[in-house]
Image (tube, rainbow over all chains, first blue to last red; front, side, top):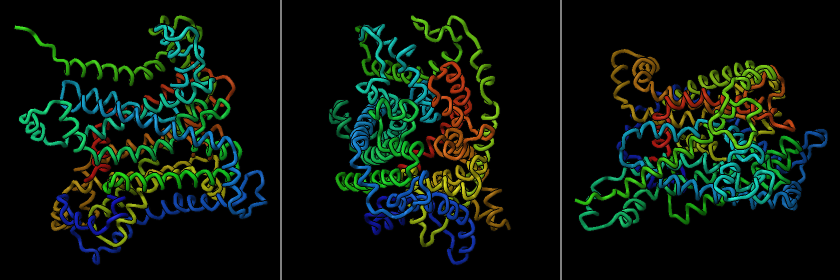
Length: 320
Length: 277
């Protein structure tokens, strides 16, 4: 709904008129003061503590701004961007970000979709089942990272133990200490965390498909596979597009798991853009370069969103 | 009569079973680890069911750190921030749901955007801002910033809850002589109590879990929250996994219980809020 307002406001307004949900009914002129007073705390706080620091952060991207050198704050043009981009660590983080988003998303989506399909019809204990598989969502990325760090541990790690038991490997693998395995390991933890999101969202969409569509298809002799591709997927396509887009943005902006599992190591091999940026803030305290990375992330995400929405000819992303 | 196997049902049971194990096992494993005595932690073969159960890791964590202080700080910060953001979001959500006015879409959009952009850009300026306000190393800094961070999301969720309540409800109360705020508190709020509770729980859990802002603002023992303390455990060279798993379990249990209660409403709010068509 919100993205749509960017693209075609006219159509959006027309839709608003015909929406069955309760419409605003009160007269604005009589209530101007009330509206203002109710919105004031939220608007004021969000402006001062989110939008102001955000703008300041973006300005910092063009400044020499390091906590070690506070007396020497000045505008330096694109110098921060140049220093960031020529750094091989940045290139590595950029490539890793792609892997991180792509593989996390693909697996989260596929498993989540199958999960939703399996949970569509009511079965005994579905409520409890849903509560259980929802658990990862109550946890912070940091704790999830810690748990998986312990499970992937070279010594005493349960994943190594299971793989050895299944005779897949002869010797334990130091998953998080080996650059060849570290990225796959953090992605694994992220998949575990994110499947539920897709499961829940897609399940809600599946449940909105009218049963008559399937009955009609059955009468025409469509089998399960045909029903899936000709009814289910087309019907929930808007949800698929919206959730995948939101997810891409969130996954890229989600450093917690990597921070806890490897903190970008070994030797920068698991840094993604957001963890790389955090390292610049927390350890190097070079706010200028960190902000430059942040601005690059925002530019990438904006381009991606616009491209994605145009490519899918989609204009109905939810308003959250 | 030949009994036919229902392959679809069978596949379903197998998949759902495997997925349940996949989801629950890491939690089980951290719980089991926290209950193992130190000497059993690395013994090969690993014990999938501990031979000796002990609470020594839990006792230990309170001895080697001020874990009681961290728990108290986390509870305080999350509860207060959750309540503040809920109150503010109820007002703004109500107005956004019920009134039509200029700039409304822009406000909703501005709130929505805060959920999408990498807020880490704001991290450094926020640190400087907090230091100017002399709030560094003090809990009010976290209460303030968590309240603000939760406002946009809570507003959007509250708005969608309010939209599901017919305006005729408070109109009737207002005809009977209630003021608008009176009608809101006496008639509307009781109806949406489950939704309000779920929103509070969601905000509480987010604040309880938050790490990076807390790490930036807090470096003093007496003001640390649980995530900050755990972060300082892992930056040490060698991680004590016994203490670590106990700390993980202690910090996860409250959120799991809360989420189990509110799960239904959170799911409802999430899907309704995000998938409006």
